[in-house]
Image 1 (cartoon, rainbow, N blue to C red):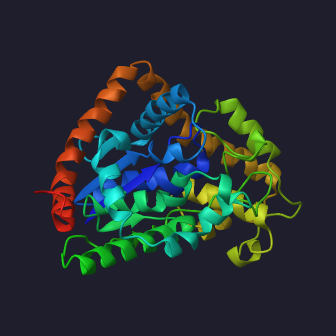
Image 2: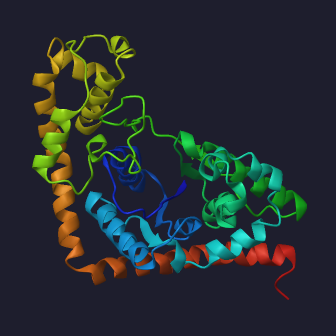
Image 3: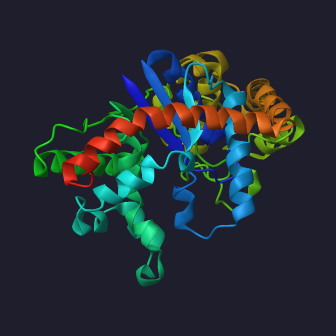
Length: 331
């Protein structure tokens, strides 16, 4: 099994990113025959760009991944722009992908909104780059959340059409990798909205850089209800804020929701929140501190990215060359 996944270097990472993606990557590097994880800096160009900020964010997020447990001796960690095969293959696959396919992409509709004429071409075509990201490495499995399933299906469609059009059994059709351990973490202010960096309220999320006292404060102020915790998980279905906090506790502790309720049944949130805060600090505090230590030697983090990119380039090169030959570019 070869796993490939990327994350945009948007700057601040939060608890939802950690539980929903990063911690799953750490587990995957142990389970996969080969795991490639990258900072998707090319994808960041689909919106407005502050060059110095993009550079800083890429290095900072690499440090977070290393601090969270990505081991460059077990996994290949790099930033996308250091491997030109991503962009080269994306251009080739642009001749295979159909405009109708891209027009149906939900994220394109959501992000472009009513001003589609004013949106960047990159925002429209970035699912093709996403396809190249995984196809260039012959990925067998790609971790996906609900919001990316459609893009993985597009990658499979592009791969199948290319193989058929050019009579080349070149691209592997990647399968989705959905970890049952990956929770959907919701806003601390609204249990029906996903935790997000774009939420204007910083109280809605726990950032991986937050100091211990701020984590405690945010959880203390997290929206809840007045009822005690039940013993039956089904009774949380109509209580989104309560369900969210219990889900976070279960994920951080590595136990099931039913186990959390068995331990805390009958407690109010005045009792439960401090325990959740202690657990959250115990997990995120060391990651925050390791990140700071890594950023004290920024050049060492960049060196990790370059070593990973060198390994990634070697894996990608044969696939790109085969695609170029298939379409007649190599003479």
